[in-house]
Image (cartoon, rainbow, N blue to C red):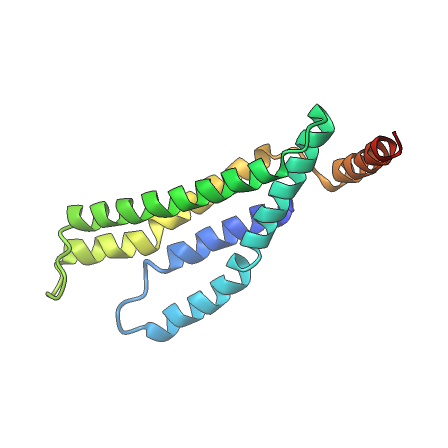
Length: 159
């Protein structure tokens, strides 16, 4: 999961950077980038949610307390806060770059919009890929955790 997430994040960063360069008359390039990006962004959500489940199992293994609901509700809350903050930051940046609806945009505004679609998400994808390197739960450890939890639960059920 860690390697796949790392690879997907870095490929997505490269794809995002590519959005900066095509001009407005190169819609076929942008569509191609979007289609190619879909193959690498698609696995991200299931991988992340599977990692949350691994973290919940790891915490139970370490502490003896099952708190899966807490982990998933915290993840959902963080995701919704991220969407909220991301939407607000997008609006603030558009305002800062002088965006006004229903008018021809200045060169500065167009450049800002291009950065919102390219360099900014690319930077965030690189940060995500870098942070995943701190994730220490691998497949070998998960096999051990699952076996020990199964034994622990069987023992508790028989008591």
